[in-house]
Amino acid sequence: MRSAARSNLLVPEVREVMDIRQASDYLGISPDTLYKYASEGFVPAFKLGNRWRFKRSRLDEWMDRQSDQIAADLTPDPDQKKPVRAAF
Image (cartoon, rainbow, N blue to C red; front, top):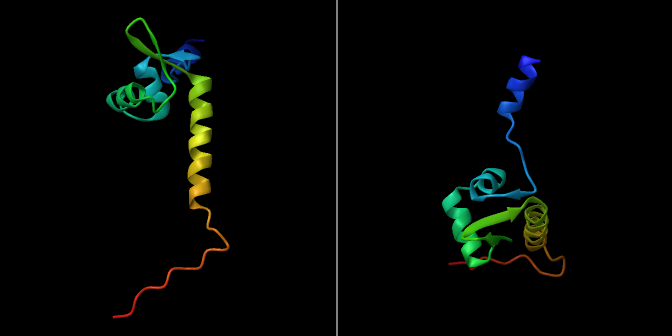
């Protein structure tokens, strides 16, 4: 029983509503960067009092949209010809 309790200490609890530290750990970015993104409206966030809060489900949806957009931007257009380098 004691080892089970100890192993729970190694796995951080992921809540639905997270503070900036928990959300930055979840996203793998620094709290300062996440604060900047939240202030600019780049990531989905809301203020509770004067503190930023982040819903895990909204962050997951946002990450899915971001990754879909990047994948679409990287998909080559079959009608577009390969650029030709100018000869010198």
